[in-house]
Amino acid sequence: MSAAVKYTLGRIGLFVVVFAALWPVGMNIFLKLMLALVFSAALSFFLLRGWRDEMAGEMGEAAERRRAERERLRSALAGDDQPAGGDTDDKRP
Image (tube, rainbow, N blue to C red; front, side, top):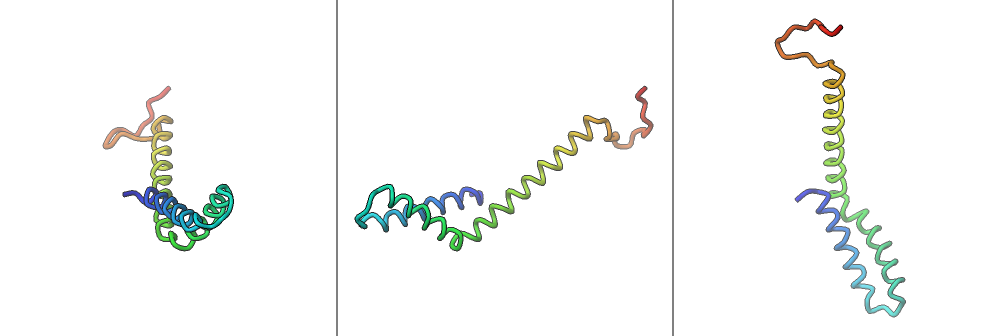
């Protein structure tokens, strides 16, 4: 399972747990939802740090792969790449 999925499910799970804990409290449902959102965000900052760091690492690696592929394609479109073992002279007019 990817780190992004684990982190997302962890955030949703924390929200549900906090909301369930607030359920018996006598207040407006929208206030309960807002409090659950704020408290679950605060808890996830501490409790899900490992998954968040893992997800950030995966996202950074994916961005680096995309950047390298984009540079390779730009180089190929510009004609900068040389054929392997071939002639290095540029024969364009």
